Each structure stands twice: as structure tokens, then as C-alpha cells.
Length: 102
Image (cartoon, rainbow, N blue to C red; front, side, top):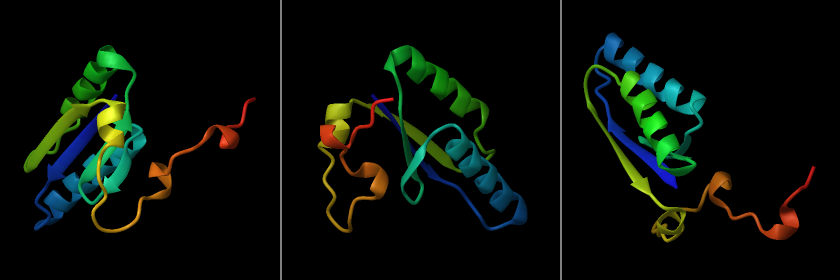
């Protein structure tokens, strides 16, 4: 499963920019990858893990702005169409020949 986070935060004042930076830093430290500007996503292992990350996300929300999250399956995420641009390195599929077993 995937948890996608969409946000639109104000960045007009110094305090708003700091809140934006802290929230973005939290997302990166919590294992989210930037899909595009203001859209981050991460893999979660089942509904329990999903609830854990939503609680953690709720505890680190900025005071103003709009933050939304969406839960989708891996199959739904894989069916996402890229209409303009190229996929990022994190989005490229890894085939079985590229896997390294330790």
C-alpha cells in the first residue's frame, strides 16, 4: 500500500516558511519520497502501519494551510499515468535481475 500526502502551505512570512520547511523535513525523515512539488508518498505495510503513519503525520502538521492524504494500493499506484515529464529514479521499476540478495 501507499500513503500519498498532498499539501498546499502558505510561505509568505518567515514563520510560514519555517513551518513549511519543518513539515517537509518531517516527511523526508519519516520515509516519504517526493513525487512532485507538494506531493509525497511512502510505502506502508498494511492498515496498522497506515494508521501509525497517519497519527505521526497528524502530530506534525503545520498550523496553517491544507494537507490531505490518500491511501492507495500498489496496483493503483502502478497504474498512475505520467502525462508530462519523465519518471524519477525512485519510480523506475526494478526487475528481478537487478535485485541483490545479501
